[in-house]
Structure formats: structure tokens, C-alpha cells
Length: 474
Picture: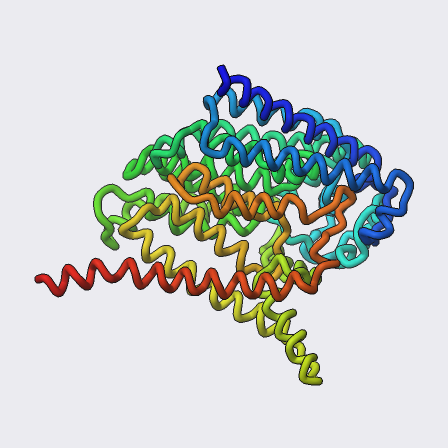
């Protein structure tokens, strides 16, 4: 009885948090008419400012506490789905919050609907009828999203013809992505021996999902849903050409939303194998997955009448500088240290370039370990490494590894802690607190990165010691 009462209490505490977040969005969300450049002080001084900030803080804290409290004690899968759905309802009807990306989606869709490639021209070229809603730094940059999402955005704008209706449609697409995740995640969790209730709870009840995927209408929702569905299909039928090809197509569709999904494909190829790792087996089974993914990306790009300019558009995200990206934090910290000695250096490009090199090494290492380990869990770790080493890290990026690891990792809560911290980093109107906390944010993130690197090296050495001991005994 106490357990039932406690779970019911947690359910309604989280709901209260969701209602407070929705209230903060109505009073001071990322509205079309909201100022494009703000800071925490001005937000507090604005009309309803204290109410907006306090409702955001209290709502986030309540949802975060409720989510964390049941991370290992979820009553049932059905309970998790009902509760997560209940928490989403207030945010489903709230104005856009925590990001203005949905306005960029609408303008890029307007460009494509007018016959202009968003990979060759910024949204100011049309010009977009809603250009005033987009941050200045993104008006003349190419779209970084895949061809499938550009087509969907064009269809949304053409079908609706208004900004408000477009926002509703983009939010519906985001909800469809969350629903796809809810449908496919149980199969993936069962395959990996993870309790379904726990997987659903960690993946769907996070504050990041309600605020950024639903209220913020981010296209990451579609990418994650397709990734989970593709991995579930591959894991369910290894060695079967038909299902493996279908899984590859789903993964290809995910890549056609955001190129980040490409990181998962090599690990899905390993999961497609039957029996121990052999190159011949990898080519025979994994080839169906890789072939399906590549053919889908190329097919969607050609069918959309676009090119692969969206890959080059990814570099435009580097205009944002925040310590939430570990390589960026290292670059910022190096510049701070240099200033102590009277020197002025531009360490940011070097640190970010080193981050890309480190990421390449980490992905190769994870793939190599996945040959004799669990490729599905390593796919989640690969996504985590991709986020951590990116030059720009927005809090909702952590939903990528969080969702996959929720269904594939039997233990470990570090990714839950990261998601909890990320939930507090962006205010209701989209103002990122990381921009205003460069000191001490960057040095602290650098110290955390050093600590994580030391732990990783020690873990790798500890894993090799049993093997060395066995060789010595022989």
C-alpha cells in the first residue's frame, strides 16, 4: 500500500511540475513576439519575470525529482507509459519553449516549398514570412537537417500556410516520434535483458522529453524514434536478410532526419550477425543493414531533388559557444589560463578540432570492443561520445544516448545524471544559462573531462589485467 501511495504521489508531483512549466511557457516562453536576445537579468525584470523564472525552476525541479525517484522502482510498463503521457499533456498545449528552432523549421520548409534549396541559401533569401522569429545568426546559414526532414517541413508549410498551424504540425511530428519510441523500445529492452518498465521510464519521463521534444517540437524526436525502431528490428531477427534490410531502412530514415544517426549504423551491423565475429559474417549479415541505410539516404536525397549540402551545414552550429561542449570548455579554459600570463590565444578552433580527432578514436575503439561485447549498448555509448565531443552541445542532444542506453544498459546511472543537469540549463524563453556562466562553467567542465579520461584509462587497464593473468597462467 505504501508503494502504491508513493508512486501515486510521485506521479502527481511530476504532473504539478509539468503544469508549472506550461504556465511559465504561456507567460514567457519562446513566443514569436519574444525578444531574440535576452539574458537572465532582463528576463527577471520583465513583466511576469519572477513568476516565469520561479515557475520554470520549480516545475523543472519537481519533474526531475519525480523522474529520479523512480529510476529503479517503476511499478509497471503500463504505469510508466500512463504517467509519462500524463506529464506530457500540459506541455502539449503550451506555446513553444526553451528553443526557437521550430521557427527555423518553418522558414526552411517555406524555402523548400518555394523551390529554393535550404542547403544552398539561408532562410533570409526567400525571404521567409516569419523571418523576425529566427535568431540573427541562423538567418543566412544553410539547413543542417537531413533531406527527409526538409521534405516534411516543406509539406507542413504548404499544407498549413500559417506559422501557428505549422508549429502545431511540427509538434504532432515530434509526438509521433515519441510514440514510435514508446512502441519500439520494449522489444529492444527485452532483447538486451533490461526491464521494460525501467527502460520506458528513463526514456520517456525525462524532463528533457516533455520540454524539448514535445513543447520545443525538436526533430530529434523523429530521429530517435526511427533509431530505436531500426535497432529493435535488427536485434529481433539477426541473420535474417528481410528484417535486417528493413532495420537498415529505418536507420537510413533516421540519418535522413539528422546525420547523427549514422553513428549507430556500424554497431547495428555487428548486432545483425549470428554467431561469433568474423569478417565474412559481418559482410553477409551486416551488409543488409548498411546497404539498406545507405540506399535509403541516397534515395531520399535524390527523390527530394536535393544534394548532400546538409552535411556541410553541420559546421554552422559552431557559431554557438558554450561550456556544455567539453572540447569548447577546454578551449575556453586554455584561453582563460593564457590571459593570466598576459597572452591572448584563440584556442577554441584547436580544441574543437582535437575533439573531432578524439571522437574518431573513441568510435573506433567502441566498435572494436563491440565485436565481442554488446553492440547495442555500445551504440548508445557511441551516441554519448558523439554528443560529448561535439563542438556544440544542447541539452536535448543527451536524449539520443539516454534513450538507447535506457533499453540496452543493465546498470549505470551516469547518463541519467547528465540529463538531470541538462534540464536546468535553458530557461523557458530559450536563453541558455551556459552562455552566462562561462566562468566557472568552462574550468569545471574541463576538470570533469580530465576526471572522466582518467577513469576511462583505469577501466581499460583493469579490463586487460585478467587477460594478462590468464596468459601468464598458461
